[in-house]
Length: 565
Length: 62
Image (tube, rainbow over the protein chains, first blue to last red):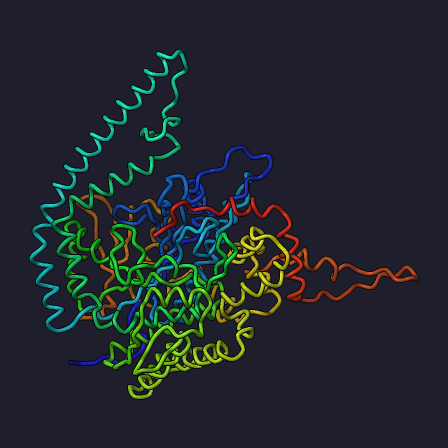
């Protein structure tokens, strides 16, 4: 088997869900909905950069930097949501950090301009809202999906189940139409009964929105149960596809990679956790760790896994419409989405989160054998997350290991890999040096990591300013640390020179206008810039773009930096 | 992103009057961590509940 030794040749990217904070001005009337604020943000963004519609069902926009922005409806309320920014594909962790920081600034500026006279509009780059609801960052790494017999088994399943995908679409659409019609009729009967009862009692009939559970197409949005019904109908309709594919994914997908990766992902929160104060005033290291209760899942039932493989199922189901997706699933490399990781304010923490994971994945791909510590993953997550980073959470050859020691284990193995395979570069050297330094300081002088590691920096501010304050006040400090505005506490601290910055102002400005070096991001960015503010119809996705309408439309593939067979 | 330090700078950047009536401008300095802590403490005393209400995403995201 031919081994690829060079670090960073695989694509990487980040998706970040930003929370919305809108403070209504005294003179303003009602607060705009989050979706309206998203519309304003896109218009403000479009005044700075060309923007085009995304292809397919998602109401997303692609920008001239090669990245995308979309509105994500909150899970339990149609009225609330998040702004999701996705960086363009990058080839190195440092490049990705620069484009992530460019995206942060671009969206923060657009939000600031979109505020208007009715209030201040600010984004927060964090992972928990004031009630503890979770969102945040997803990391995407192109890495080895399967090899040899496993890969051919996967391809065989793809071919065998494909007729079911074709058949499931009409079945699912019929099921959805019939199901929704039934739900609508039941809702109307229920509302009519309520109105009749009120009239019989001589009272004024209520409006639709005043009756819980009644479908209502005004600004109140759809009830949560209605979305759940739609979701269940879709899952039932596609069950003949989802069941065998979920099994195939469980058996084949990233099998060697994930076995090595779990202890690393669990322990890396000591370097990249964003810190979180819960409603009881207890402080934990990682905002997302507490909600990850599966190792790998597709997210169909909203389970939050460490590794999310929902993108594979989605690509397969949609491959009937877009055969290019089927072709992508055939490859030995696929996009692996890591969900257990916090969005960071500290540049070095964000850099290390991506870079160390990329190096570990590269080492696995190069055939390096790792010593894999044995651990109870969710018990270990809870222990580390409570701040007990020196408590034993794993065992290797009879020896107990704490979170920092697990990280040392991986660092030392990656060092050997870099030396043996001669994949050293300035950037690799820089990553190894910073990783070593942070781990050393975590053991010996944790407070010296203020400005470098988020959970330590934020705890320092909460302890410094929150002494004697209520839990509410300290939770406010927690949230405001993540504000992407000049008043955000991270940026206030940065003004004092106490935080380590890796991205220069010029680099950031360039990343706010232009795509990175990868061929597909460059092509996408150029097309968006060329056609974005014209009357030519254009729609874009991550793999292709379509110019024109109807029979004369031209589809352009963006998969030119195709490294993988 | 450039931080807004008007609350911090106010005490250091205002000119001082001397006894003979002349005005001596004081050189503007970068805010210190203590200044930041003071700003955060001031913020924290002003309706933190309102701030918490403004940051809500029911059910969260993906």
